[in-house]
Length: 241
Image (cartoon, rainbow, N blue to C red; front, side, top):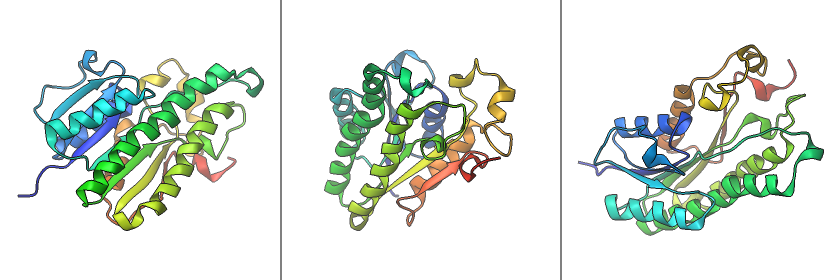
């Protein structure tokens, strides 16, 4: 019998992250889930296939704890989902350096810390691997009136590095892909008017968490897809509507 694969999932305590944890557990993976307060979230049933690690992903020590838990508990790192993210809009002239640091810490430094550790382990295992990151269609398809310039500078950086890493590690069979959602029905949008959210895609729809999770699962399991940005956004990346 083939041994269970182990996946690391960041931003795991609610929304897309929690959906990812539950789906990958159901489909036979060991899961190491992390967020600032994932152990206090009580989002998951106890399982000997699940390890929870608290911490800020922008802190290199958190990444070391997550990778260490995977090796100690399960003996491998086979896949990673960089899901942790923060989002806020402001007119460009109102963004501060502190805003940039906050966004960069989670999106860029967090990506680097954990992805480096995961790739090192995948290379040592010599069995390939998968890295999928969650960005957004807004990164390169802005919507008039949604002023997210500095936030998108950091999310767009994940799109760019993912394509470069896909090329760098292609011969090692480490695949690097991105899922770019539009508006998703998560707690992040609990206080936003639904009619406005629906106007942000030409299909006039809001994606479910399950749709994003299925896209991530597909890319994690797809042996010949790398360097891809899969838009799950009701067509928002197509342009004006």
